[in-house]
Length: 582
Image 1: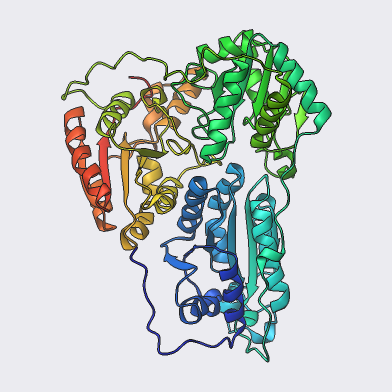
Image 2: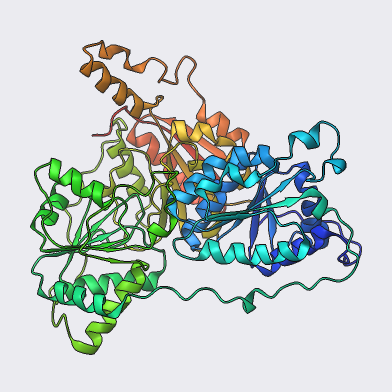
């Protein structure tokens, strides 16, 4: 990895407040800090480079604070562990706020390090320090982080740093924010300070299902003839993946997955039903006699949608999620309240383990799912070959990408609206990482870089399929991948429009009996056309396109896959047809 090595003459002694902060940060085992630099961080920046030698953690330069947060977000989606991001003062935190909101909604751990100009007004430089000082800087993001602090002394800062990592990693996970006064960073140490050992502060023991409630639910499941598991927010650990499969097979339970959250169950397993609430999913939920949610996002909304489509759920509903600990009333990301027969306030993995352990002891689910256990994936008719001159609908795009990567282990980092998930089989928790949490726009490039960073040397091909609007919001995030030699393949599904909003405008026009022909005004990115390839090359990527049909895209993919596997950053401009159906 191409990380800058500082010039050193002799080992630096701990002399400054920021040296001490850097030493504590090293103890937290944060491998990287994505940073957009600024004067409020100059003391800490110097200490990370000249005191720690830019090693453990390594600094990763980003061209925008939102990229720094998105990179940390993508990294956490792969590893389940927090990465740090550093943002400059109030101005940097304001830039970073959308990315922090995404991480909050996605429930991923992250440590955001910030700074403020001198709290003591006497210490402020004229003009600039006044602009970069806020009375309560954390209030900018307090509604969508788990915890924040602005410690007033170095010992307090050390405790805050240790606490921050613990809180970020405790379910429900999320971002935390620490703000360090410039004066604290740049103060001269008067004597030695003890660097805390984080191992002395044990991580909280995960919550476990209450035994009586567990037994009631196990009995309910053992008597069910058509149980359904709704798999939502799930970690990327392969052991937990295997345990979920084992539970579903013992129960003979149909598993419905929510692909906003990434792969939670093998999508070609005989017990799996795709597309969340598609026609088959609606049928199995309507016919279910028990429904158990493993941290499903918005179960009440799912049930409401099913009821509106004539398939109300009448079965007892078991909800497993610690998510309500993060609900604070500012953001409505908590969704509607679902009526639950039983609610376990633990992570899904704990409930799965507890049910399997109870069954191991008492054979509550004897022989269930034997016909599915150990069976090969469900058969699927091979797709007809795509003609080389076929125009690129989203479905054709997905087919071409799948065929070009079929012999390569792929992590599909992101996909655009309308993506054809049925074209891909997800057989590993890292096969697909899901969405961005906050459902905004602009996070894709940064999250792709962060996920690719975490996947480096894993043997997996990091592939992100981004919309052109998402790509253009944050295309300069690619520079970080190019500079630090992070292999990554991005395919831009370029319909030259904010097409989802065209659909909204058409719907409104029809409701109001107005011309639908005007739906593209202030939506389409043409005249002039945006040269995606030139923008990618300008960030240091190898660029292809525009590819306008299946044959051109297939040729670009063959070359790009080979180059990425050799360590390159590649971007393909794929001109797709407007629309979400083939």
